[in-house]
Length: 403
Image 1 (tube, rainbow, N blue to C red):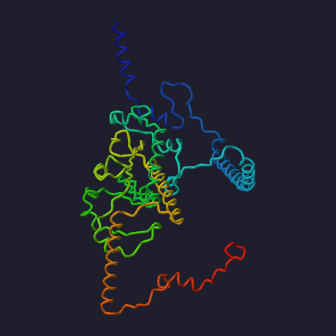
Image 2: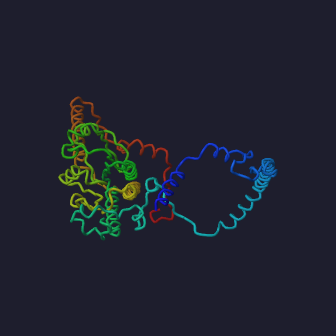
């Protein structure tokens, strides 16, 4: 037992001790080691590397050169085959071009702005995201009749209802433009300015893309006092002679207001209600539909949806203006003269009649009147008199009963 414990203790110490310098030297040297005193055999020597390994670098460099030459030759062959490959590609392309489907309609970001549609479809409304409402917790219960359902906590607007209300609003805009009414397009959110300006340009109306000044309708005598006015005929030509009336008349108000974001323009809609001006508004699920006269249930947060709606309403106004001008060329006036202008015309006519009568009385008192009777030529205008002088007389038809 004592011998075993001693061997375990000294054996562990011998294993854990570092190797001596003579042992490390013998392992790292390639020279023959001298024989130890206790060795009786010949000394061992480390084997030298063979001659093939000595010539290995030369063989590796030759192999690398041959590989580089082969790679360069392959690259030249690939470059030489490019024209033929391209010709084959074009041939295959010409053969396969008639195959497959053709995309006839592509969406462009300014498509509804440059060329607005005359009518909408459910696909167009779906692509414009007109059906996306707000969260179910933000809805207005008055919009229940416009909501189709709910998905992922978001209300879905019925596109059939949107299309029907949009066509009704377009009809209203067309008739107002046909009867010579003034239409105001309002859109004050960021990004709505191009749509508002384009719609007003098509409909021949006015636009507003900044904040509405409260009192622009109810207190227009002060706020809009510096606005320029003009009087036009049925062909939109400016008429002279109304300068005195325009200095004293009140600023005009729109006959129809189209509001693309009613939530931010409640003061405008309230003033329109007080003045009896009809309004058209895009009503989202969180808006109050009683603020406007004609509702268009749609997503007011989508610029594409707003551009589509404004473009269609602008097209409707353009059709109304075209109809009005066509009837004006045929001698039909679709609107009545405003009461203020009619009163001014009657007053001016009475004043001119009184001035003429006073001039005749003064001429009679001074004896300047001519007692000769008036001739027919004196009642004709210059144009009528000139036409009678230049046009030849019409000869009677001998076959007529009168002849």
